[in-house]
Length: 355
Image (tube, rainbow, N blue to C red; front, side, top):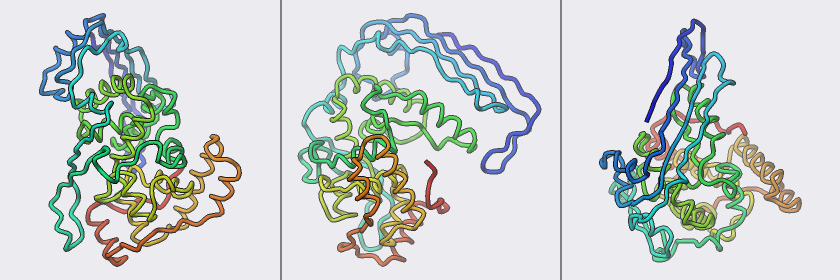
């Protein structure tokens, strides 16, 4: 492996969106080359504690890579990420059971940390739920509203059925926004990446996790149909505090099954990702703000423009009103909002996002 690069500092001013200013602007160029190497040898060269979820993989074939990155804070329009990764020269001879289980019908047990619950709920700080047919709330792909699939794809991963798990333009966009925001909040994760992160990995932002994530995405995109990836994703992701999977989410928010979700309700679900705990405040209030109403209409418009709603469906959705089912709500609006503020412990975000 050969790693080369350069760093130049030029006088100038770059203002982050936070208001902080940088007065010497770096220009960074990095190139990474991995010559043709046996895949098994390359995997064995990574210390096992760094990639514990890759233990049990047996590979054959050969790998090579030639990658480059160019970042100039004086000209972010010239941001350049590219190259070639020859991962397809590798073949998986054997994979660990926890990974191959995703291709079958068996149920998977998930344990997640959950925020403190409202007073009197007896929350323990962890929650265990099942992804699979052993869970009565599990929703097979065929019974998930196509409007929800289309809304999630519109906001999260528009090219999901076309790519193989990685979206380079998304990485470039996320990197630029992270630079402008003086931090790393956006990860440009595809739906497959999010599924892998939720079912197999932790959510910590480390190089080790990202390395394992990329490898697992590459492998699972080969053995899983796209419909199965979406099924696992929608039955595992968080839709609100202590609310995992679209089955419980559809019942909690709208008192219905996942198959009956309307276009406007689907747009709402897609709008609360990736901050479902924070955006649970809408449910606490029992209604959307005018700004968030407009945001849902923008999502519906994008769905229509991309052929994911018919003209009749679009017209009906634009004219409809979102109504929450609060029949099982036990908290007052104030108690619910106080709970959301406590578990997010961050400043309130703007009420709507740009496209």
